[in-house]
Length: 376
Ligand SMILES: [Zn+2]
Image 1 (tube, protein in one colour):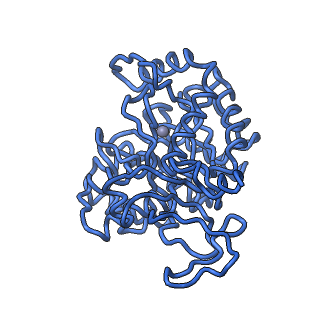
Image 2 (image 1 turned 90 degrees about the horizontal axis):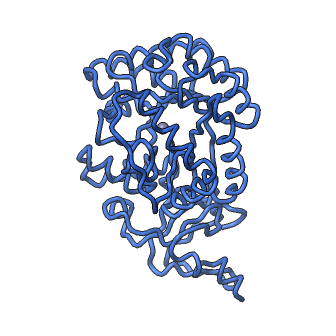
């Protein structure tokens, strides 16, 4: 490795030239590290404290409950977000797209914390920040706050349910796209709206994408609706989604419908995987920061039990980097496994996690080359 990139790959039978620095991985398997395409850091609760939640009747009850619960841990938010980031790193995640709550009440306080963390972790994790109006862009009058976040350095404009929450699909999307175009930002919308209401929203997103010339810069997260309507509808929609290069991001839900990713992929639509919930939060007590386990859930759910589809599942949690190549960033994990499929099946502990060639986490961090050098 040189300057954070892989500079040479030697076959095992080749002698390593004398004098070259060597570290013996002792039979560990090297795998590309992971990208979490959808995660929230500002919703994490302390893991040594049970937070009681009650059942909620609507998404608005849920919003209210989350706000109350989050305000009770407000003073610890930075510390808790940091802990989440560390747990993601320990699982081998070295790239993440993070949605950050913004509304008139909390203002940009969460976003300011995330900017601090992005700076602090810049050598450990590549972080994209999405300005996310959790309470609804129009519903909570958050447009000016999102604009402020974009000025401060947000990479993408977020949103949630233009129909179900904002009650006006076109007006919501008009605002989202205007902000995106003004700041040359990407778009990533949470879409939980069901069935044909969700499909209508995606169609409108595609219209706006085409009008704004925003091809390749728009993603839809969750999109449960695609798993609820007839497959024929998805086939038709997927053609246009591929044309506009819209990405679908799923957390592989097992408690709701999931977009039929095999259909989407067959039409050339990109699919990314995110964890969404990394631990105990107001939405679920079952969050998990481990993308390898998420990839396993995907493969298991879709009964991808054969080698080639398991390798494909691995490629979804580590997009574009399945093959380590000379010149590629030296972002990788070392684990006790025989091949990527085996790693997906057993989710072994991450012995070492490296970002740009530097060990940043893992159970063997203390025995890694950097620490060895420091000791000498
Ligand atoms: Zn989310």
